[in-house]
View (cartoon, rainbow, N blue to C red):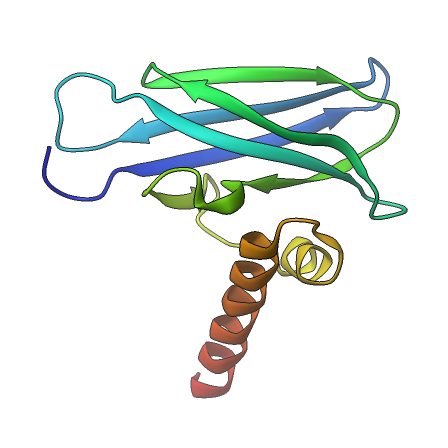
Length: 130
C-alpha cells in the first residue's frame, strides 16, 4: 500500500455512566482495512496522572469504538511512542489546543509530549501569520 494512512479519532466521556469512549476510523489507498496498532494512554484531566497505562488498541476495521470505565474525565494520549506510521487527526479537523498544552506538560510518553508541543508551536505560528 502506498501513501500514509490517516487515522481519525473522536472521544467523549459520559460522566453519568463513567465511560470514556474513543472512536477510530482509518483511510488509506488500500481497499481493505489495514492492521494499525494504536498505543493509547489516558491521563486524568484534573491531576495529570496516568489512569490507563499504555494499552495497544488493534484497529483492524475501517471504524472501531473502544470503551473504558473510568471515574473521571481524561485526556487521551494517542499513538504513544509513535506506535504506527500514520497521520493522526481529530474528527473535528481542529486540534484542541488546551489538550495539546496539557499533554505537552503532563504526558508520561516522551514522543507525545514532544509532538503536542510541536502542534502548539505550529498553531501559534499560523495564528501570527493570519
